[in-house]
Image 1 (cartoon, rainbow, N blue to C red):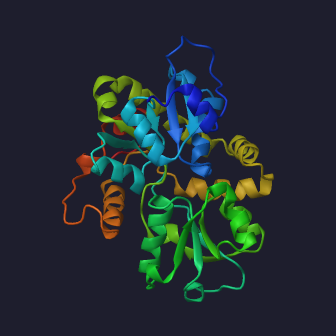
Image 2 (cartoon, rainbow, N blue to C red; image 1 turned 135 degrees about the horizontal axis):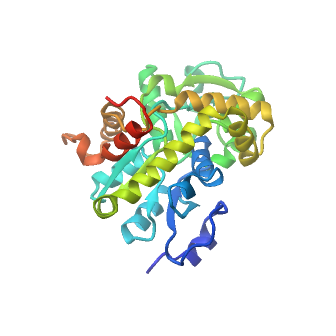
Length: 322
């Protein structure tokens, strides 16, 4: 049964397109898994005209990774705006897809707890919130806990939607949460304490673009234009600080001060050229194997990523590419 645009409208939240009307069926559907800070780049690409500039008609739709994978396989989705354990696991499970571009190469997640907790040890046997089990947020937390010298099994890890993270903390449903901007900044402003800097412990891509191999093979020019639009939007987001902060504040419904703090944290995480790195992708694979999946399997970079088009875009925009 086809997912269908009508069904998607009922199930998921769309950001309104800023594109002029185009022939029916010409639009590209780009799914994204959450409303965190990195998704702002997708909105910037639409609202600041970068998709249009690159002759693209793109609709963005909020969709869980598992459903997006099925939609990609069925041909109902054109692109998935995510590169992480969930997308790579899908590729290794047989989905013919590749990571082709990344937003950042440093995670912005931090474990935030109630003021009563001062160390990781204080949180043993407590409930830790993450945004999606098996995804980047969850896997990076587990890796950071291990690097800090504690056993992740000493904690109860619970999945909570990003938009409900602060409510979960305030209501006591969880004692700590692995958060990124803007929710990280909001939590800190409410007096919650930073217990563990996950990004400093784990080098891993955050955000990006996953594409089916068939589209890479048959529509390389289109894929390259999508990457170009996103990379240009990221470039503008970094260079146009006031406009970026205003966009971020409006999308996340926060005041300028909080938006400015979130902006600085996000900008620090961005990969300059957007090219997937071997180290970052290898860490995703290691995290998946550490969880008991695909263990003992030697996985090459080329099995999960294709950096060719992102490298071409980076060179055309005069970024350094190794």
